[in-house]
Length: 510
Image 1 (tube, rainbow, N blue to C red):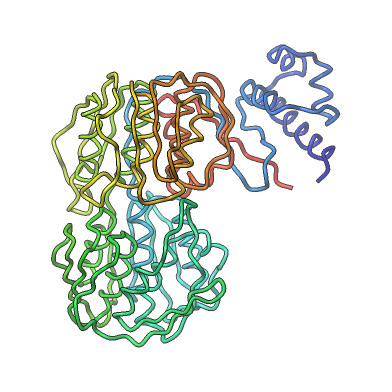
Image 2 (cartoon, rainbow, N blue to C red):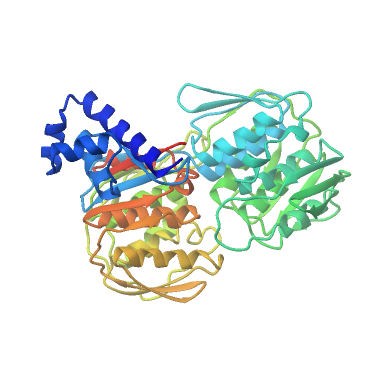
């Protein structure tokens, strides 16, 4: 598409939006402090138009005009500096959702997942499931019905969708009992550093699965066996533990898993597997004893618990915008260390009595933030496996530290690339010093200023930048927000219900 064609298409969109608002060219020109002749030229495609002018026209017309990005992208236009208020209800867990979708392959009957997060990561897994013959149906309030075929069509797998999610690696555990040979494409997801799949392959080897890594694919051969001894995981990873759990679920014997992750999504998977008839001892600990079954053919329903990472996102949003908001249905047992760390920095909040999530297990609270000045912690902030500070919550402490008085050391020892993304906060005037690929110093408080930033290809750092923009008075633009939509459902509009001013800007499709 030529530049002239783009200008004509933009002009036509502006004209249509102006007319739908009942405005004349003269009235629009007056609102923009320009001339009627300039508006006429713009609408006819005869004048270049800046992104700033596009944003101003969008404001006047109360319409989501376009941005000039690659086809298919979405962008956020953020008017920062507004205080938030009101309440927000936490959605169910993204990470539990993808694990449960993979685990549905264990069941030859119909699985219904209730209150499921409708996010891009979930969409990609559903696309993969549909492509191999699984029927899915959304109904009611974010409920998903999953019905498998008698035989999966693995050769028809949507490879493009599969390569856009790292969760595809969790197909190995369920499939090893159903197929002697199969292929899966290499896993994708966030770009935050090297993450080896060897712990997955090592653990699954004890069930009789061997995998050759050929160009672009995991080439699997399976001769299912009952593990002869306890499986000791070389890393206490969430997806690794989930993969081994799913392999153990269809193993007609007892499997002991040591150094297992006891994190929230693993617990949700355990509760779901119990509904399928699998017996599991040690849920919430690092040693799981699984008594699997030979076959699963059940009509089952399950609702995952709420997302602790989303809860932390809204806590951070309240802190950086100096706001008091109420966060409902927060899974307290999975954010207790984060709250303790914040308390040590001066954060104050109120908390309701505990109640139970729809899964009947997870403890929830309603939490109301208070506006209090923060100071840097005495010690560095770093993640640990549960029950320590969650690795996915660590990035939020970067933008929080930028609001606190003093210097904070943040040590992301897990991912060698993610700390680098914190440097993007400098574009919003934060004082961030990168010491090495794992450590940053952040000096606050920050006098925030607006900026235009391309979204990092990593979910949590992307949200951190969005939160910084909420704090920065003026107009900021966050471009290509797909990585945010991977893990959050309608985040911009949900923040807007609290008083944020975020406009979703669509690009032009050729």
